Length: 357
Image 1: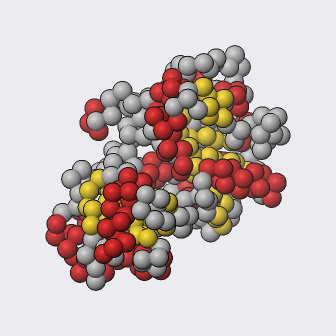
Image 2: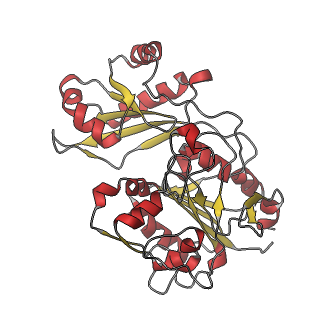
């Protein structure tokens, strides 16, 4: 295996490229986030196409590269589940035998009652919902009553939304810490998430002070191996939170994808070695194609003369597309995985040991 001084690892969260074989078990048959987006609007993604994106699966208006400059392929996960924690843990070498719990009908009554008892407030919501939609629906009631909005989603998450002028951010974080301690055993969700917002009814907006409280990953994982070898890891976005800070002592948070790429661009010039690991969480919004009908989506976030990664070797950048539902992700030259002659990815147990030798 080649050795690298540094690797840029970018996760486009929830941008999948086709369903997994077990999609029916999750109600995700027919999912193809990127393919459907390409059908609904013109995509300007020349750099990703140069890397080999259009060689993985047909994408409308995109021509497969005759000689891709990156490795490419689909990677099916081994772990059950479809949430952020499961996907990122597996990318770091942790495979789960059992999925984190999800709550299609909201959390059990006794669990919510115990949470309310511990925080000293009643709550509203307690159902699966889009974060923006539930704030539209219940934000005014929350402002009027001071009751936190509790909700979940298709992921294994317990989310708490509060208005920053109604419940101070420090109290919201304390509520999340209470929830994290409470949610154990059979209710050990992957993440508890603080979702602060501001504004007035009809004009509520999320703020940038989101915070994730994840489950501590089992040992060892990739970041543990790198720490033992004194390889620096720099997290961009929610990477630090997903791994509960372990092995990611240097990190920056982001306000969105544009901010994330600005910070990745800065890292290109500032960091000469180690792993620079970025999650572009706002890519999740691309799932909702109707929200972007008729728009043109452009990508200057990859390699190319017009992008911030100009001059960075193609073999030192990894792009991973975390599935939305049970979809296949897309990986570049991932170090921990290798592709066989059929384009299938396999785990190479020795890869991480050799990567930074």
